[in-house]
Length: 383
Image: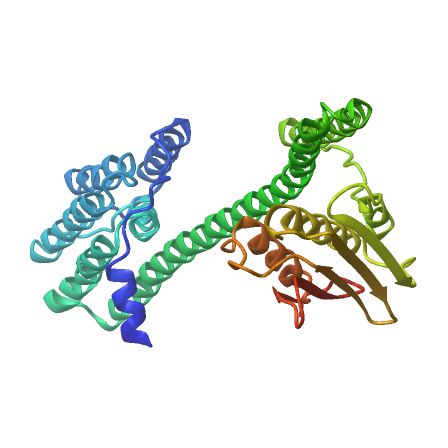
C-alpha cells in the first residue's frame, strides 16, 4: 500500500488552480524583511553580515515564485542556505543566522502544495540533504538535536502542504460530482416534463388531422387539448428556467405527488386510454417519493404512447402500505417487432428509483404488452 501511495504521489501532476502573484505575496516578503531588520538591530550573536544578507536573499526571492516554480524555488533557497552553513563551518565563523530564515518552511509547504509529484520528490531530497551535510561536516551533540528538530519541521511543512493539496482535490471532486448529479436531475426533469406533454400534443395533432374533414368539432376539441398541454409545458419549463437563473435562494414550487397521478387519466376517446387506481394510505409519504411516483407514471405513459403498437389501454396502479409504495403500469400493446431500444426515459426512471433506495423493473408482461414496476420505501431513504 505504501508503494502504491508513493507511485501515486510521483505521478501526480501540478494543480491547475495556483493563484497568481498578488498583494499577499508582497506582504509576506515585507514581513520577512521587517523580521530580519529587527533581528539585526536587536541581536548581537549573529554571523558576519555578508552571510546574513545572502541567507535573507535566499529566502526572500524564491517566496515570490514558490507557486509557479516550486522546485526551482526550493533548490535555490535550500542550496544557498546550505552553502552559507558550509562556509560558516569551514571558516569557523562565530554567530548564528537570522531566525527569519525559517521562512524557508513556506517554500517546503509550497513545493508539496503546488508542485508535481516528481518535483515534490526531487525537492524533498534536496531539503533533507541540507541537515545531513551540516551534520557530516561537524556537529556537536547540541546541533544534532537541532538537526533532528529541523527534519521534523521540514517533514511537517511537507505533510501540511500535501494534506491541503489533497483536501482541495477531494473538495473539487465533490463539487464536480454534485454538479453532475444536478445535471442528471435537470435532464430527468426536462425529459419527463417535455416528453410527456409533447407526446400528448403529437398524438392529439395526429388525431385532429385524421378527423378534421369528417368530424370538425372533434378536431377543435383536439386543438383545445393541444393548447392546454402546450400551456402546461411552457409553465413547467419557465419554472425550471427561473430556478436555474435565480442568483439567490428561490422558493421552489411544490413538486407533483401521488395525488396528481390521477390527473394523468384520460377519457375513453383518447387512445390509449389511461386508467389510474390509487389504493392505500399516502398522507405521510415523503415528498421525494411522491414526486418520483408521479414522474415514473408520467414517463411510462409517454413510453406507452410512443412505443406500444396498437395499444388501447394503459393501467396505472399505485399501492401504499406501512413500509413501501408500489407502482405498476401495464399496457396492452403488441410486442411484435419489440420495443424501441432503452433511451433516456428508462435510464432516468432507474436513476430516480435507485437514488431513493427502491427497485425498478421494466420489460414485456407475461401475457401481452409491457409492464413497468417500481417499489419505493415510504421515507425515500437510500439503503
